[in-house]
Length: 349
Image 1 (cartoon, rainbow, N blue to C red):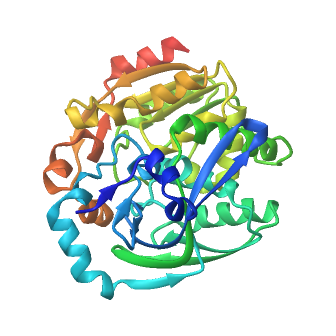
Image 2 (tube, rainbow, N blue to C red; image 1 turned 180 degrees about the vertical axis):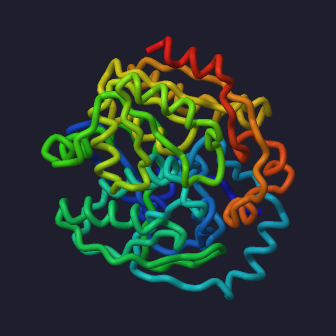
């Protein structure tokens, strides 16, 4: 069975403790530990297992939704022992990782902020092959600003063995936001970007799920109220962040582009159009942007829509999500807003 080592056990084990390094961002009092050396790693959880079958649950659990219990079963232990010699070996790399489903919230909040802790100036950076070209360009541009020369190496679904490599711990969401705000805000201050009105409606026309099917009615009324309608996918990521940082009011269907509200100014008004999310396992995702708004001192309102089943699920969703959840979860449906709720939005402005 795999063994989970607590922080005190790591400190008291001299040989194991020597495999950890720590980096600090003193200006914002943020710290990050790196595990260095040899380890096995899966490309879904990014949960390192040492060659002595030790793990560090408290350091490498991404968030409360990241269930890692299966790593501690007898079946998993036997499986990794039997198959470890077949794992592809990657050397001399920094494992940043990225969401295998290319989820923007996870890429921005869970994975990306850890790059600011590296002191290396030339890096072979490990990311999942599914990461969008747009987010790859974003990482590269930030690294260039910090005089870091990176080369991407891609991993696919499955397990790997890393040698002479490093992986930074995962950070809690508040620390991630503090890091992003500290570094990205400095960039946005001097960045030229498309000029937009202070009132923005975010479309999800290119998304597979949670599109507002009757949004034409909403858009017509919002334009009469001076709103500008944008599709974030038409803009580079830094431009998206700049747009959010300049907005006073943002209306958007539930979706990971709302992660950019962390760059809004205090007091900005966020109106989220959301499905009901009645299933217990949807509780955290339902409250995600409300919690972000609270943390950032934003004024938040949620408008609940009706839901409509989609005709076909995306290939990525079918690959990573249980079929029962795909069919029952509001996350994987589209939305319709009643006329009365459209009027409620307009009247609240």
